Image 1 (tube, rainbow, N blue to C red):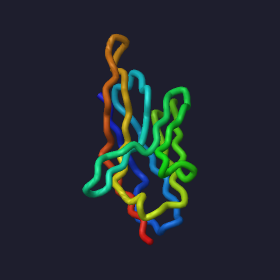
Image 2: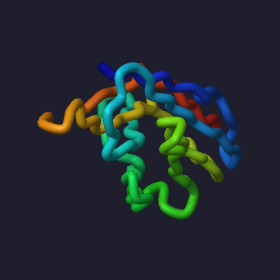
Image 3: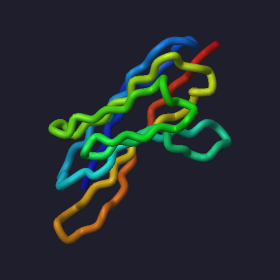
Image 4: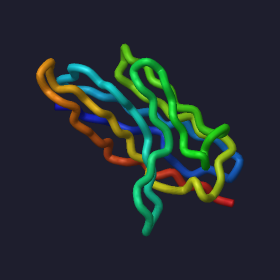
Length: 121
């Protein structure tokens, strides 16, 4: 199994920056995709950014140009650098990975515990 531990959330003023980290541990065979999702109160969880093993990235339009996702494959860690934060970025941010459990197994999703990001104006 895979465990994900997130860190880096907190309270910041609008225009400020935060850097989120998510480290995967446990019995890791192969991680295909890593990403960040967020959920504001009363709203659905939505994708913020994803990155594949090959380095291809995808961003939600609302964060494009402000957020940068990156991963260290050797450390099984994904990062989210968040700059020029806005109040609408306030949410619980969740790390997500798609993990292949074995050569014959399919992909299985894992989720981090979530970390709160609050942006004050």
